[in-house]
Image 1 (tube, each protein chain N blue to C red):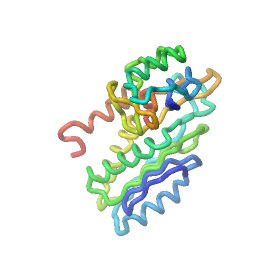
Image 2: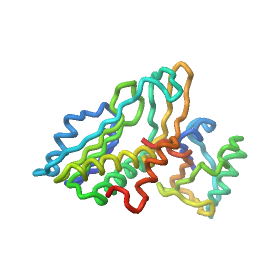
Image 3: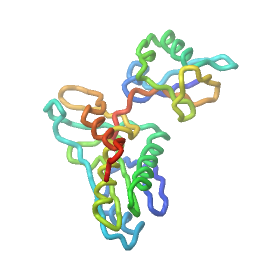
Image 4: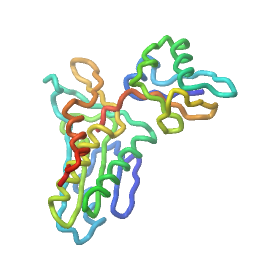
Length: 79
Length: 165
């Protein structure tokens, strides 16, 4: 699964990441842990970094399924 | 233009190339014929940073889908909150140099007060809520920008009971 990043959090990941998740899905909190271990980026745990699944902001217990569009976003700067 | 959503009295646009303000004003006027007031605002890229350093480029990163939705949501809120006849919001993305127009807001109404208020409300919301991530580039390197305390205060005043009256 390809993960998008937006804002400052994208820098340590080089803009995007790829992880494999189980068929029955993975909670957002678990996905953060997987990204942290795979890429060595603890900043993904920062509470200001929000997760969006299929373009909707979700909570930590939301289950990500294969085929979802997943993005992690730093706080927006505004216009 | 990268993306736009347009209805007869509402226009929201994410632009990758310079904003033609005259064309946007002409478009706005056509959306609400017979109006008595047109108020517009254009924001430009400053030549120095908040720290007083020279700025080479301002870069606005955007979300490929959520950014335009945020612009449309803010434009619609302005249209619905005030007694105005049409609203246009056009926002740049990508790399810009000092002096380039970064945002255009236009409002038409029967009377000037509502148009002024709506334009200010739209800008206050855009400054804090539009889905962009800004970076400054200059002799200092690269720096991410986040909303200032002033931006937050400007936005919060619209939550007060008598805001805009």
